[in-house]
Image (cartoon, rainbow, N blue to C red; front, side, top):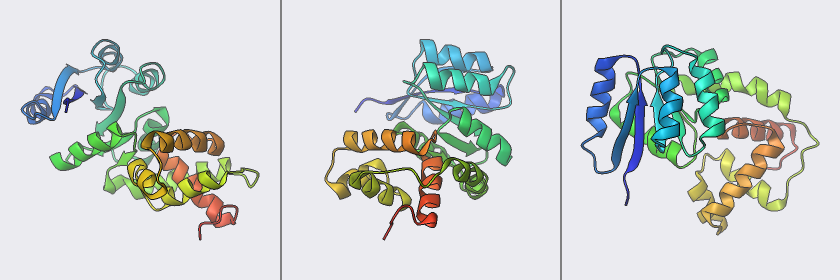
Amino acid sequence: MEPLTIAFVDDHPILLSGVCQLFSPSENFQVVGVGSTAQDVIDIAKTMKPQILVIDLNMPGHVLEAIATVANEYTHTKLIAFTASSSIDTAIATLEAGVLGYVLKGSTLDELTDAIRRVHKGETYLSPRVAANVVAGLQVNAKARTTPTVRFSRREEDVLRFLLQGCTNKEIAKSLSLSEKTVKHYMTVLMQKLDVRNRVEAVLAAQELANNGTLDTE
């Protein structure tokens, strides 16, 4: 199996060096780039094309704009925020800009590794210490977007039910006897119908439909 290519951008030299040293010896990962500014985020995504880009949020430059640029223009690279900020507003703004992972500094190596693997699969990952509050904050947006006029096919409802149970795409595929590629297609369609940007918001919107009785989850 080819190693997962990753890059790190952080303006704290000691932390940057330390995290690179933790991942470099692993045969499962290949560190292909490092940087220290918002512009480096874009440049690394464009030139190095890492599968995962782990970035700090408090760096020189416009970090959220850099995230949005990479998320929209360099879709081969998935983004994880690795930050000391537990601000819910910051977390929500970062997720809406395009990151799929939000990991607090001070987390264990296992947690960061788990986040990298999940995000590579297209899942959303939030550190447990911020997840509950972020979900509460996003709930407002989900309620605003969700309407009773949304219509789903029978198979789409099946996928939604498993999504509400916290299943991964692989687990949904196995349960419904579908290919993982087919499940990813359904997820794309569902996010369009629900008018959401990521998996977390899709779950919240589906929960709101279930609470309103629009989606039968029995």
